[in-house]
Length: 416
Image (cartoon, rainbow, N blue to C red; front, side, top):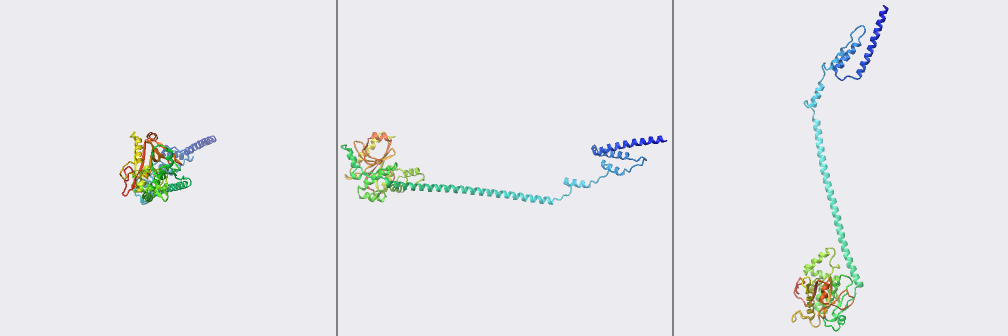
């Protein structure tokens, strides 16, 4: 009997050990659940409850576990009303409160409109700033141009003042010339200007005023030709009491002649050279026979200009010498108003090679010249061959007797 009890105890102890090992394995399985399905989990839980049954065989209360298993297995009824409402809201089939969304959308649209308006306003401000910067840049350019213009005008005034001061300081006095030239010619026959005391050399102290100096020589000779010439020249600003006009006064006389319509082509050419940088009066712009003709014709003096082109005429230089020989022989228009009297014959002007000279006579088919580059008279005679070696084009001016009482031609090449 005792032996049976001992066996039962050992058997119960063995059963208890197996149950403990089962519980440990079951708990380990509960830590790592099997995700193959809720039904399998429910079945394991049911087995676990059966293993926990008491040794006397009383059945455990598994009603709660059965309900739990049923729920986990999906066999029991589930409250899905909340899920249905959520699904309805998500699918849009159920009633939705869209008032807040509409208000939000309206606010967003208004914000977008304000943003677009702000961008347009910013663009307008940027354009206005760009225009303002452009206006400022234009104003700076205009101010710089005005400053340059004022600077050019000031420079022109300084140059004119410096030139006048230089003339007052170092300008050589005019020198009686014809008597010395006649003496240098000796026994060579010559037809010269007259009278001797009417011809003076006006030396140029610079490298550009040769045309003005030659015109001064001619104006001085014309003043000795009679009172009518003195009056006409003074009215045009070419003569001053006891002398001749200064370079700037000659420039003013030329400009007045241009204003009256004389030599419009030459006037435009001179303005093109100056390009508006400097006024003609007070500048160092050179002049030639045409500009001298403008000044003289504006005074009523019958000045004529004639050109000779050696590029087209191989005898042009000889024709020039012949033309001036006839002038100094005083045979042009014999018996007409073109003949100067025996007591007076003014010199002529000639321009070639970029330089002006006075012609005071002709000797042995050679021009007798008076050059303003000299400080005192010299003897310089040029034959046609000499002229051809120096230039290919020549221009000369002669004065016919008498002061015009009618308007003179505006073109220098037209006879006065």
